[in-house]
Image (cartoon, rainbow, N blue to C red; front, side):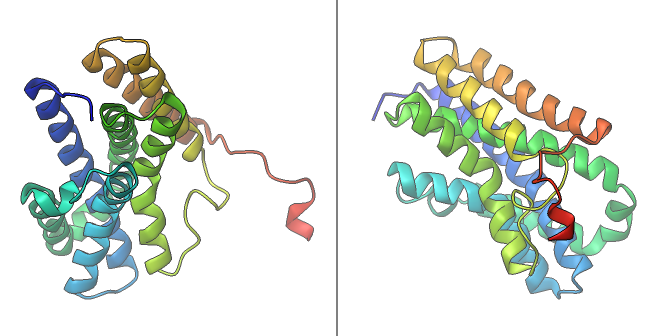
Length: 214
């Protein structure tokens, strides 16, 4: 494993925790809309916030995963879940704002995920895949548990494509020796900016011609 400076480690932890909080709120709102009880809200909040990072850490050999080794990684999603449980009417009325924060969380996750994979010695392409998994993994598990087609598979505004782009920018930038802070910021901006623009303009990934009639 490549040596990681304390400042860089702290940056990744902060980025991870902010992304976890934002994603956990989105997972909690899904649980509320599915009429789940408080346990269901906490489970979906934790799954959404921690799932992608858990998958990444297991695949790159960062064991035990941060979600199990650091108490902050458990406190943040459960806190977000309780916040959503008690204040979901207000959060629900701010759905557009929540979607915006979800896009920001996606950008944070893919950049942090790719950076951590590079720190653990992966090449730029596998690291980009790990960044993508970090960004979309928790949401995919959440949707399966909630009985929905995962967002990355259903027809919707662009989600996985901006995530892949942000992860690729981060991993290839780090591979050529650029500053981790700079590259992480650029990867975040590429992913979150593209996702927000897609939401605003209604951009969707192409679908097969005539698929609606099949």
